[in-house]
Amino acid sequence: MQRFLIITTNCVLLVLLLIGLPAATRAQLGGVQLSSASTGQQIMFWGLGIAGAANILVALIFVKAGKHKILCWEWAAIFAALWLAYFGFVRGWFNFEWLKQALQWVQKHF
Image (tube, rainbow, N blue to C red; front, side, top):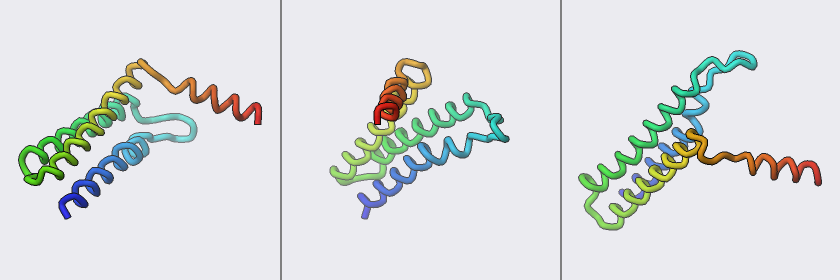
């Protein structure tokens, strides 16, 4: 039961952060974006950080079984990796221009 609760909670957090948060922070009127991009980025950084820290806290304090502690640490690592990837994307260290070009090539040739 505890394993199910850990997985369900983290999946809900992941969906809220990756799907719900960008949808909620993007306010548009016609073709004009009204909300600030930096506000959405800050909320995403804080959300991923809090989710990772919460998993670490739960693993250290509340969970007693070894398998469940490992599961919490794995979820903390997932949130940390997402935080680092988002940080790199926002800073411009990597982008998805290659994917756009590949999809355009496929569209042109097929």
